[in-house]
Image (cartoon, rainbow, N blue to C red; front, side):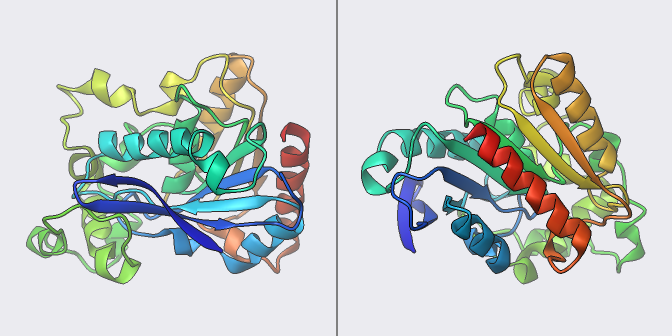
Length: 287
């Protein structure tokens, strides 16, 4: 494994870890971690999943990006766009991979960012979204969550104490989950992550909704989602799949019956193994 800095901004180095496969000039999978855009790091990629990707003949580039609320969504999206530019410009001389065969994979918020990458000028050849979402303006993010309100209530002053003054590009869940829990309990995720007013600045926010911004040249997309997800609604992937098919984009939704959020971490389950077989079939077809 080798670590690269793909961007430095405001004194914050943003990095990616490159895991090479044995084959030369092999396809590249760009992995984007989840964490509600508030926590997580490039090291969150599941070890078993990483092994499967590498053994299947894919290089993996697991990336960081600046985290909210210290950095707002427009700048987070810019980090991802800059990462894609770096991969195809500087990355080709730093890493051995086939620039004609690059896919983006992510889970949860990383799945959202993966879907967002399909709206950039420099796009991947294919996208795989594990329980991601195409719409940040849905009621599930703008209204208090019954699921998260089952947990101990987080007061706003505590959530604010967890927010730093400088931008960060990696953070463990233990130090940041309180921010996310507060946001979901109060329906304030959009406020904290974007810094925009969803009523007054609706048009600007829609620019960060893949379901609205997708066009007919959007990359082929595979969506995987459990229909019992209590965090990101299963309907988010249903709507994204429907929209892409309306545009004539190749899209497929794999539904995991009774699947919860992060269903893919239960690698021993036959349904999850079958889902990964579908992922590899999809990647083989498009890379």
